[in-house]
Length: 115
Image 1 (cartoon, helix red, strand yellow):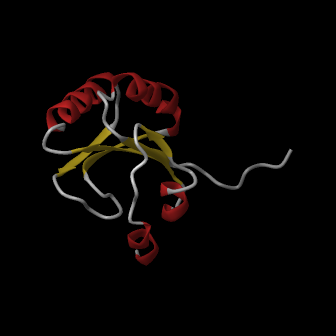
Image 2 (cartoon, one colour):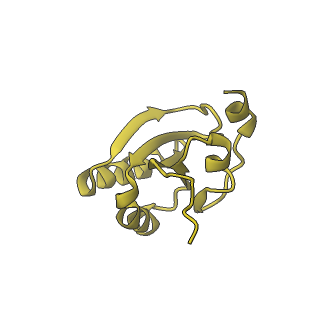
């Protein structure tokens, strides 16, 4: 059996919000911090990088995927969330390797290609 040469170092979940859903995003963030040992990134109140909306990032380890992602599925409060692996290929990680909860938003992939 051939071993897959792509290594997943970790995962990111990007939780998107706007002014109307910021309180929901705060509740999701609090729940994640209380339930799991994850790295909660800064709040970005405007689009940044490839992300088309305000968001914060949650970083977690591969061995947490089977607990964090199902929790997000059940507790996302209607928010759109991008979950992607960290493999060193940012374009692929944010596109064909990505998982979306809620609406799939259009990312500005050119930012990742340039970076």
